[in-house]
Image (tube, rainbow over all chains, first blue to last red):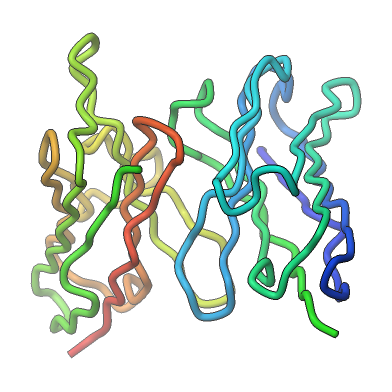
Length: 120
Length: 113
C-alpha cells in the first residue's frame, strides 16, 4: 500500500525557514517523480514543485522560485522541501504527491498534508 | 501558463440525478505524439487530501465507481457523475500536467439539492 507521510510543518515568523519531509513507503520511491502541492485555508490547490526521478531536474512555481528547494533521498525514501524567506502568503497545507511516472504525469497518491503557518 | 477554468463554481444536484462539471484550458493539453490529453480530475472532501478520479482525461482510476466518467479533448473537458450519491458531496478540481507550471482549476463545489 502506497503511503506518504508529511512532517515538519508548524508556526514560523515571516522571513523564517522550515524544512518539510515526506516519508514514502509501499512503492519503489526512486522510480517516480514527486511533487509538493499546497492549499491555503479555504482556497484551491496550487502546485509548488516537482522533482524528477533520480533528481535529474527540478521545477518550481514562480511564487516560490528562489526561495524553496525540493530534493529527495532515494536511499531513505524521503522527499524534502526546504522553505526559506517565508511569507504570510505561504501559509497553507502542504501535500506530498507521487506522480504516476515522470514529471509530466498525473499525481496518483497524496499524503494527508502538513500545515505551515507564517505569522508574527 | 495554462489557465484552467471550471464551471460552474458550485452545483446542487438531487440524489440520483446527473452532475456535470466543465473545465476549459487556455491552451490545448493534447500531446499529438501520443494522442493523450494531459488532464486529470480530483475529488476533495473536507479535511482530506485530493483523490484521483480520472486521468488522461477519460481513464478512470482503479477503484473509482463507474458513475464517474471523463470526456473531452484539446481544451474542453467534462466530468460527469451519472447518478449522484450522498458520498459524492465534495469539491472537484481539474488539473493539467501538460506543461509547467502545472495548474488546477479553481474547484467546483458539489452539493445535494
